[in-house]
Amino acid sequence: MMITRVRSAVSSIIGGIMASGSSAHENHPDLPLRFPYSRPDFLALSPDEVECSADHISRPILILKEMKLPWAAGYAEVINAGKSALNEDQACCEVVELRKRPADPSSPSYTPTRRRSSLPSADVLECIDSTEVKEQNFHYWALFDGHGGSGAAVFAAKFLHLHIEEQLQEVLEILQNPSLQPPTCLGEENPIHQLHPSAGCSQRGLSRAASLRGAAGAPGSPNTMAPRFFMEKKIKQESLVVGAIENAFKEMDAHIARERMVYSISGGCTALVVVYLLGKLYVANAGDSRALIIRGGEIIPMSSSFTPESERQRLQFLAHLQPSLLGNDFTHLEFPRRVTKKELGKRMLYRDFTMNGWAYKTVQEEDLKFPLIYGEGKKVRQQLDTSQLTETTARSFMTVDALQVKIYNLSQFEHGADDVMILATDGLWDVLSNQEVAEAVSGFLGNCDPDDQHRYTMAAQDLVMKARGVLRDRGWRIAGDRLGSGDDISVFIIPLMHGIKQPPPS
Image (cartoon, rainbow, N blue to C red; front, side, top):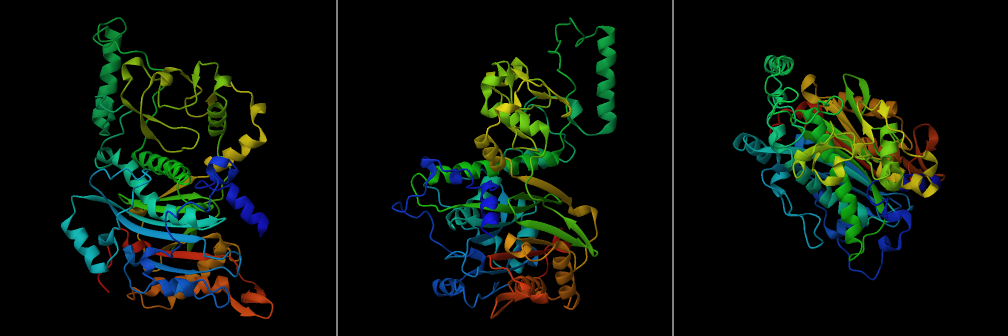
């Protein structure tokens, strides 16, 4: 178990860098607490109830008192069997409006505003949907598994969705226009970005024909643009959402690092996040928590444990750590095409070694250098000596590159009342397989009234109970007299049928 916890701490994206031993990031007990220990806000527990929840002997299973989570999602949790003094798991669930840019969440004095309008009751949710249809929002569920204390998990639960909100604001106008292909450089007028096939083909054909005839735009003409390097990539809109989430994780990590200089924030944490936006579920996982979808009896894994994903990310990371290896001639960042001088100061699509999606950055002189990575990831400039990858570098790479994002297009499928997404920390998966979890949830829901909005919370409670087990002479035991989970367990069960339309009031 200890080996598992150490491996989990190394693979953490949030707080993992602080756990590396740097004196600047060490937790100082004499510093004031940023936030006191608590349980998830949506459980609405009193201080006495929070204290009772930390009983390592009885290990009470906590569930929602009221049905107030979006989509009538269910939630249940239980503390560990004595591994740590407090429950190091945390959870968050919000409906976040994307209307105007929020206050800077990275400021040490910033305190998040409680979004009570997002989590009161189903009837208020229905009102939000009917009266604010012009506003864009995203639904958010998250689990954080702390290591070496609960401070980082509590902090991330209060702030990560605000960082995601800030990043999505950057690309909101593009996302709200489904016919618009993300422009490579903001402010650049190019009809080819419109996704109407006839318009795009016509524009390409006209440009080529004009070039052959020596018209404006042809080589040598006054309006000639700088030649493009290689072929320009076409970026999907969903990649902007992925890039926003990835950047939000990086900002969250840096945010914790800054605040640990002035506040006592213990440990680090993993993160499992689900964002629902414009008909799609984006599942981001950094660590050993897990998500899966059950649809029509089929099991669809929506997360996987961290592994270095590609040669592109590996080489970009080496270039980031060892810029001298680039000889001041290359940039470790990737762009859809070669950057030109006329784009200095503009916002352009890019990604680095931590990203699979794309985001916008302001073009600087450094970005004009020849790209280390170009094309479709198959042609790589071998300018780096991979022997430079030291043990310390390897550990950092595992930390910052732990995040993976998967996408599920909810609007492409019909979902019944028993089709759900399950999110859980490793306390569940340590003792139950994907198949066992799917069978337990499907079996429980199959015996419930499909119209009962409490069924998903009861299913979450049943699942936690199956993983925790019953206390016997030889410890906590589950089915088959196997050893039950002695770790903290947190579980969301999210019904997918409510993805397009909120459930009626209970």
